[in-house]
Length: 89
Image (cartoon, rainbow, N blue to C red):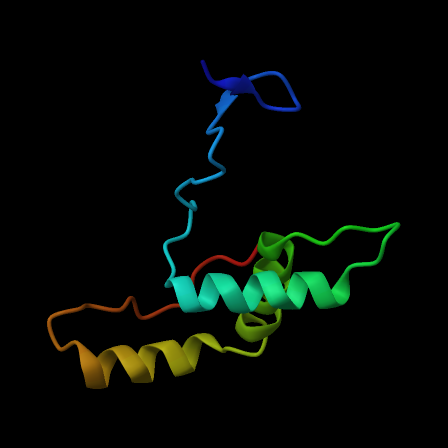
């Protein structure tokens, strides 16, 4: 019988094996786990997905829409890119 998750909504896998919402290699998962362990403290736990989220935020922040258009035009001629940038909210 599956245990209930701490929040009480869904069962957890008792073996601790699951599928991440964002697919990634086992090597990347291990790197994120190591980074999370290094960044956490006994009083503040850091999860591998918190590290992944922060890295993604910092990696995407400097990317400009024009760069995306140039990359798409070189790598995927069948992909059509709109002439105007998407709405920024």
